[in-house]
Length: 102
Length: 177
Image (tube, rainbow over all chains, first blue to last red; front, side, top):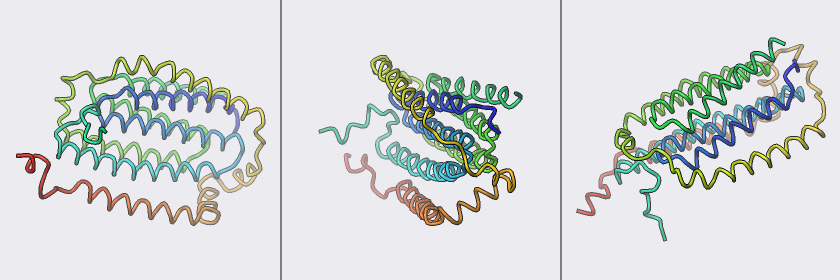
């Protein structure tokens, strides 16, 4: 059950989360920004499940299920916002949305 | 030993595909790379013994959410986005040291956390019942309120997506002209 050490899960989760955050910063297209966010959420899920395998608990898997459900809701609302931004303003790049600039 | 090899396979595939998600320029290729990450993460879940979460990851993420992203990419004409640069290059270079700093901080926290983490208590229970029964039991007893709240959040998200995504009677361009 525990041939894979906890440090391995932590390393994978760390790499994925950092790449997700970096993608959120550098990406120009809004849809790919959302996809980088999914990457970061998956990194957290890997961490939860890996810690569960180490501790012998199942609570983290319950939280991982909640995260999956909330990510689905977030994808629905976020993509709806992107479609409505595109329909109203005909832009899909994050630096062209300047309506709320002070 | 074989578990370790499978874990290495899936995790290296996940990290390489995550690099693809961040670096590729064509959004369709990005979606394919994201799909590869999701399937690899499901493989990591199976290696860790979380069969229920892995199966739901495959069903919800790798099928439903990815297909949803593809639909949205067909609605937004991404050919226009291809003409522009797909990344903020200067901002990316400037924020790269911050990424390394984040890595260092997370590594520190993880090392401290691993050194003090306790060892498990449910392992015998897991051996006796299997993963799905234990997760279902704890989901419907200890976390039942949170489960119901998640269903409420999903309902609100669905209503919000419908309201946000519906066609407006008057658009910005109509008012401007």
